Image (cartoon, rainbow, N blue to C red; front, side, top):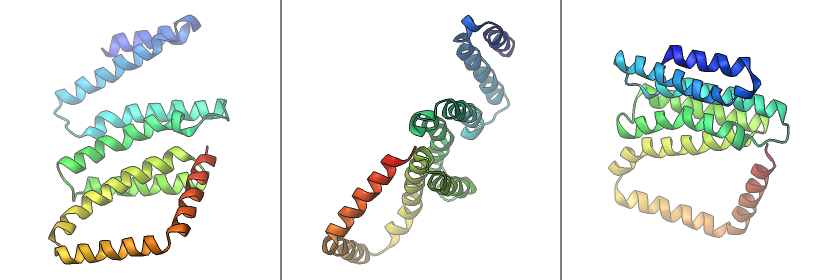
Length: 184
C-alpha cells in the first residue's frame, strides 16, 4: 500500500492532468498507515484520525490563502471535526474522566479562543459544540448524584431569569448569530 500510494502521488505531482489521482494516492497512504497501526495493536483513535485531520487542515489553510472569500466552515470544518470528534466519542463511550478528556477540553478551549481572536467561524463553532458536549458528559455523573429538588430549583430559577429578561436574551441571540454570520 505504501509503495503503490507513493507511486500514485508521485505520478499526480509530475503531471498536471493526473492531479485528481493524488486523492487516490493519499487514500492508499492513509490505508497503509492504518494497517501498520492496527498490526502493532494501536487502539487510540487519535493515531488514526489526527494525520488525516492535519492534512485536511493544511489543505483548508491553503484554500483560505488562495481564496480570501472562502468560508472557514467549508475549508477547515472537516479537518477540525475529524480532529475532535473521534476523541469525543471515545470519551463519551469509554472514559469520561480521563487525561484524554482533559486534553480534549483544553483543545476545545484553544479552538474557541483562536476562533474568537482571529474571527474564524469554524474553530469557534467546532470548539464550542464539542466542548459543550464534553462538559455535559463530564457533568452528567454529578447531576445524577444531586438531589432532585436541587436540580428542579436550579431549573426553575434559570427559567425565571430567562423569562424575566427574555427580550434582552433574544437581542443577545440575534447579536450572537449576526456576529457568527460576519465571521469568515
